[in-house]
Amino acid sequence: MSLEQEMKLTVNGETKLNLADLEWLQAMVSERKQLHLRTEYFDTPQLKLKQQGIALRMRQIDDQWLQTVKTSGKVQDGLHQREEWEHPIMNGEFDLPLLRQTPLAPMVDDSGSWKQLQRLFYTKFNRDILMLEATQDTLIELAYDFGEAVSGNNKAIIHEVELELRHGSLEVLQQIAEKLKSELALSYNNRSKAETGYQLYQQQNTD
Image (cartoon, rainbow, N blue to C red; front, side, top):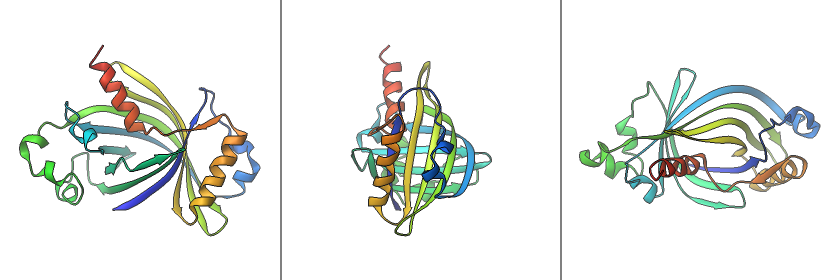
Protein backbone atom coordinates (compact mmCIF):
# COMPACT_ATOMS: atom_id res chain seq x y z
CA MET A 1 0.00 0.00 0.00
CA SER A 2 1.16 3.52 -0.78
CA LEU A 3 -0.23 6.99 -0.19
CA GLU A 4 -0.97 8.72 -3.47
CA GLN A 5 -0.69 12.50 -3.32
CA GLU A 6 -1.52 14.44 -6.45
CA MET A 7 -2.94 17.74 -7.64
CA LYS A 8 -5.58 17.50 -10.35
CA LEU A 9 -6.37 20.42 -12.64
CA THR A 10 -9.05 20.52 -15.33
CA VAL A 11 -8.19 22.12 -18.66
CA ASN A 12 -10.89 24.67 -19.42
CA GLY A 13 -11.83 23.94 -23.02
CA GLU A 14 -10.88 21.36 -25.64
CA THR A 15 -7.88 23.20 -27.12
CA LYS A 16 -4.78 21.17 -26.32
CA LEU A 17 -2.14 22.76 -24.13
CA ASN A 18 1.36 23.43 -25.40
CA LEU A 19 3.47 22.81 -22.32
CA ALA A 20 6.62 23.32 -24.39
CA ASP A 21 5.91 27.06 -24.29
CA LEU A 22 6.58 27.15 -20.53
CA GLU A 23 10.36 27.55 -20.33
CA TRP A 24 10.45 27.35 -16.52
CA LEU A 25 8.59 24.03 -16.66
CA GLN A 26 10.77 22.56 -19.42
CA ALA A 27 13.88 23.48 -17.41
CA MET A 28 12.81 20.93 -14.74
CA VAL A 29 12.09 18.05 -17.14
CA SER A 30 14.40 15.07 -16.66
CA GLU A 31 12.41 12.54 -18.68
CA ARG A 32 9.41 12.55 -21.01
CA LYS A 33 7.24 9.92 -22.68
CA GLN A 34 3.85 9.40 -24.29
CA LEU A 35 1.39 6.60 -23.53
CA HIS A 36 -2.04 5.47 -24.64
CA LEU A 37 -4.06 4.16 -21.69
CA ARG A 38 -7.31 2.24 -21.50
CA THR A 39 -8.73 1.69 -18.02
CA GLU A 40 -11.76 -0.39 -17.05
CA TYR A 41 -13.59 0.24 -13.76
CA PHE A 42 -15.50 -2.46 -11.94
CA ASP A 43 -18.32 -2.50 -9.39
CA THR A 44 -21.63 -4.23 -8.76
CA PRO A 45 -24.80 -2.84 -10.42
CA GLN A 46 -25.78 -1.65 -6.93
CA LEU A 47 -22.44 0.22 -6.61
CA LYS A 48 -21.31 -1.63 -3.48
CA LEU A 49 -17.68 -0.55 -3.90
CA LYS A 50 -18.55 3.09 -4.47
CA GLN A 51 -20.64 3.06 -1.30
CA GLN A 52 -17.58 1.81 0.59
CA GLY A 53 -15.33 4.49 -0.92
CA ILE A 54 -13.35 1.94 -2.96
CA ALA A 55 -12.43 1.98 -6.65
CA LEU A 56 -11.28 -1.12 -8.55
CA ARG A 57 -9.72 -0.77 -11.97
CA MET A 58 -7.74 -2.65 -14.58
CA ARG A 59 -5.45 -0.53 -16.77
CA GLN A 60 -3.71 -1.54 -19.99
CA ILE A 61 -0.56 0.33 -21.03
CA ASP A 62 0.66 -1.20 -24.30
CA ASP A 63 1.20 -4.88 -23.33
CA GLN A 64 1.40 -4.18 -19.58
CA TRP A 65 -1.56 -4.63 -17.21
CA LEU A 66 -1.98 -2.88 -13.85
CA GLN A 67 -4.49 -3.92 -11.20
CA THR A 68 -5.35 -1.04 -8.85
CA VAL A 69 -7.46 -0.53 -5.75
CA LYS A 70 -7.92 2.99 -4.40
CA THR A 71 -9.78 4.49 -1.47
CA SER A 72 -11.68 7.75 -1.79
CA GLY A 73 -9.32 9.40 0.73
CA LYS A 74 -9.34 13.17 1.14
CA VAL A 75 -9.78 15.85 -1.50
CA GLN A 76 -9.41 19.60 -1.03
CA ASP A 77 -8.63 22.36 -3.54
CA GLY A 78 -7.54 19.85 -6.17
CA LEU A 79 -5.23 17.92 -3.81
CA HIS A 80 -6.11 14.21 -3.75
CA GLN A 81 -4.65 12.03 -0.99
CA ARG A 82 -5.63 8.37 -1.22
CA GLU A 83 -4.42 4.95 -0.23
CA GLU A 84 -3.51 2.91 -3.28
CA TRP A 85 -2.64 -0.75 -3.97
CA GLU A 86 -1.25 -1.13 -7.48
CA HIS A 87 0.40 -4.21 -8.98
CA PRO A 88 1.55 -5.21 -12.46
CA ILE A 89 -0.07 -8.49 -13.51
CA MET A 90 0.42 -10.92 -16.37
CA ASN A 91 -2.87 -10.37 -18.20
CA GLY A 92 -6.27 -8.72 -17.90
CA GLU A 93 -7.48 -11.15 -15.21
CA PHE A 94 -7.67 -10.08 -11.57
CA ASP A 95 -5.03 -11.49 -9.22
CA LEU A 96 -7.19 -12.55 -6.27
CA PRO A 97 -4.35 -13.21 -3.78
CA LEU A 98 -3.15 -9.62 -4.31
CA LEU A 99 -6.70 -8.28 -3.94
CA ARG A 100 -6.96 -10.10 -0.61
CA GLN A 101 -4.22 -7.74 0.64
CA THR A 102 -6.53 -4.75 0.07
CA PRO A 103 -9.86 -3.52 1.49
CA LEU A 104 -11.50 -5.72 -1.18
CA ALA A 105 -10.67 -8.90 0.78
CA PRO A 106 -14.22 -9.41 2.20
CA MET A 107 -15.76 -9.23 -1.29
CA VAL A 108 -13.14 -11.54 -2.81
CA ASP A 109 -13.90 -14.12 -0.12
CA ASP A 110 -17.66 -13.79 -0.70
CA SER A 111 -18.20 -15.65 -3.97
CA GLY A 112 -21.75 -14.33 -4.32
CA SER A 113 -20.66 -10.70 -4.11
CA TRP A 114 -17.57 -11.23 -6.26
CA LYS A 115 -19.66 -12.71 -9.08
CA GLN A 116 -21.75 -9.54 -9.18
CA LEU A 117 -18.74 -7.45 -10.25
CA GLN A 118 -18.87 -6.13 -13.80
CA ARG A 119 -17.31 -3.42 -15.90
CA LEU A 120 -19.45 -0.31 -15.50
CA PHE A 121 -17.40 2.17 -17.52
CA TYR A 122 -13.97 2.75 -19.03
CA THR A 123 -11.63 5.58 -19.93
CA LYS A 124 -9.26 5.90 -22.86
CA PHE A 125 -6.84 8.73 -23.30
CA ASN A 126 -3.41 9.80 -24.47
CA ARG A 127 -1.03 10.76 -21.67
CA ASP A 128 2.04 12.97 -22.01
CA ILE A 129 4.34 12.44 -19.03
CA LEU A 130 6.99 14.87 -17.84
CA MET A 131 9.18 13.95 -14.88
CA LEU A 132 10.00 17.17 -13.05
CA GLU A 133 13.05 17.56 -10.81
CA ALA A 134 12.09 20.50 -8.60
CA THR A 135 13.62 22.25 -5.58
CA GLN A 136 14.01 20.62 -2.14
CA ASP A 137 14.86 17.23 -3.74
CA THR A 138 11.30 16.96 -5.05
CA LEU A 139 10.36 14.65 -7.92
CA ILE A 140 6.96 15.18 -9.55
CA GLU A 141 5.26 13.27 -12.34
CA LEU A 142 3.24 15.62 -14.54
CA ALA A 143 0.63 13.74 -16.60
CA TYR A 144 -1.33 15.60 -19.28
CA ASP A 145 -4.38 13.53 -20.26
CA PHE A 146 -6.67 14.01 -23.26
CA GLY A 147 -9.42 11.52 -24.08
CA GLU A 148 -12.82 10.37 -22.86
CA ALA A 149 -14.77 8.37 -20.29
CA VAL A 150 -17.48 6.04 -21.62
CA SER A 151 -20.43 4.20 -20.08
CA GLY A 152 -22.86 2.69 -22.56
CA ASN A 153 -23.84 5.47 -24.95
CA ASN A 154 -22.75 8.23 -22.56
CA LYS A 155 -19.40 9.95 -22.94
CA ALA A 156 -17.48 12.76 -21.25
CA ILE A 157 -14.27 14.52 -22.26
CA ILE A 158 -11.17 13.92 -20.15
CA HIS A 159 -8.85 16.92 -20.40
CA GLU A 160 -6.73 17.42 -17.32
CA VAL A 161 -3.29 17.76 -15.79
CA GLU A 162 -2.21 15.64 -12.83
CA LEU A 163 0.85 16.39 -10.70
CA GLU A 164 1.81 13.38 -8.59
CA LEU A 165 4.38 13.68 -5.81
CA ARG A 166 6.92 10.87 -6.21
CA HIS A 167 9.10 12.13 -3.35
CA GLY A 168 9.94 15.39 -1.66
CA SER A 169 7.91 18.45 -0.67
CA LEU A 170 4.13 18.61 -0.95
CA GLU A 171 4.43 22.40 -0.69
CA VAL A 172 6.64 22.48 -3.81
CA LEU A 173 4.04 20.37 -5.64
CA GLN A 174 1.32 22.86 -4.71
CA GLN A 175 3.47 25.81 -5.76
CA ILE A 176 4.02 24.32 -9.22
CA ALA A 177 0.29 23.58 -9.54
CA GLU A 178 -0.54 27.18 -8.62
CA LYS A 179 1.98 28.55 -11.15
CA LEU A 180 0.50 26.36 -13.92
CA LYS A 181 -2.99 27.49 -12.96
CA SER A 182 -1.95 31.16 -13.12
CA GLU A 183 -0.45 30.81 -16.62
CA LEU A 184 -2.78 28.34 -18.34
CA ALA A 185 -6.52 27.80 -18.69
CA LEU A 186 -6.70 25.47 -15.69
CA SER A 187 -8.87 25.11 -12.60
CA TYR A 188 -8.51 22.82 -9.59
CA ASN A 189 -10.40 19.56 -9.99
CA ASN A 190 -11.81 17.67 -6.99
CA ARG A 191 -13.35 14.94 -9.15
CA SER A 192 -11.51 11.74 -10.09
CA LYS A 193 -11.89 9.96 -13.42
CA ALA A 194 -13.77 7.24 -11.55
CA GLU A 195 -16.32 9.75 -10.27
CA THR A 196 -16.86 11.00 -13.82
CA GLY A 197 -17.42 7.43 -14.98
CA TYR A 198 -19.86 6.68 -12.17
CA GLN A 199 -21.88 9.74 -13.10
CA LEU A 200 -22.07 8.52 -16.71
CA TYR A 201 -23.13 5.06 -15.54
CA GLN A 202 -25.88 6.46 -13.35
CA GLN A 203 -27.11 8.67 -16.17
CA GLN A 204 -27.13 5.65 -18.45
CA ASN A 205 -29.40 3.83 -16.03
CA THR A 206 -31.82 6.72 -15.52
CA ASP A 207 -32.21 7.84 -19.15
